[in-house]
Image (cartoon, rainbow, N blue to C red; front, side, top):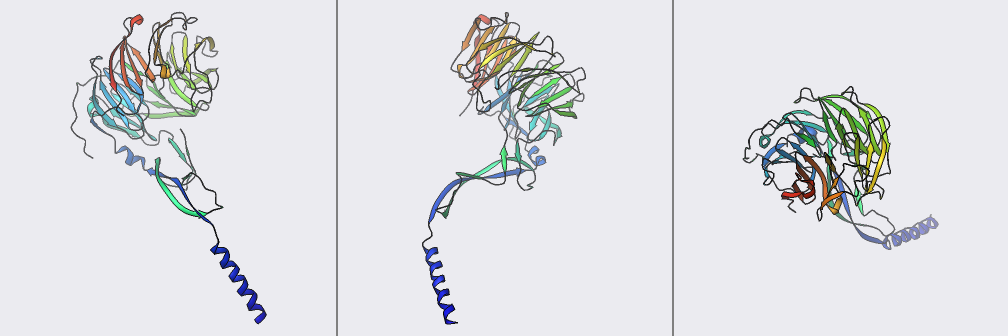
Length: 419
């Protein structure tokens, strides 16, 4: 028995010695914990307050004499534009998770994470929710974590410091679960004059919402969703279809939908407005892609960027006379074009940090040599041209211009972003 005890003592001593000599190091990293909320609770946060400063601007929409400016993921600024030389920021509609907007009659449609919310804006400074389709839209973030309830709305971050073995490898961040990122009492408010926004109702070219007659169309990354809005205050889902991948924008014109994707423009006819049918596709290089249409031509801007995976920056003019076989007419090199708008022969293009550019597009084969003017030193994003007044949204605010004389476009006003 004594022969057995001695080897055990020696082994125990060796193990103790190894533990004493074990190397440790201190590691610091960011830990991201997903945050979930029930969509029914999120919708309860929708309320109208007094006007707040513009901070992170997104989509724009013109309805009646009001401009609606999306504050990315936060809600909608209501701008009274009765006097374009002195627009007034009169209200803010708090809508968590909001990115896109559209209006029919007095009803504003807005995304709120997975919900499609309808608000009565007869008095925009006192907008009220009249209907909610809670699961109408796909989530902004897709989570594969273990069954957490509610909608993933973001992440809480914390700086974590811990001791680990010297041989351990570790991340510079940690995300709980397997998650992939895609893509109070209200204070008193001013009460501007009530209005009936029958005309105009115009979205910017980067919108994912479009309305044609009694149908609301919404595109996400890979699908087209249709809602019957014949009863404007109560949208009814009318179907959805998969139409590809990397869908970016939608534009309704003359009973057709023109859908911009990272690889081209798709055209759908609206012979049956609640069941759009694919007519044709115009393919282009991999690039981000807003589209507007007037007459026989579609105007498409392509720009490079982190999500576009290409260095193409140009304007393409496409003949859509035959919607089943769209054909390229001309191509023009640009700096980094984003949103665009056309009114008659006047074409406006937001050309990234080169600002707003104005072209005479009467001859689609010579647009590049007919630039009428430019407003530089503005990071321009999108525009709406209507009734000789141009609205432009940029990272530094909302601009308005008078283009009664396209040869001499003049700035009327600017509501600046507050950093």
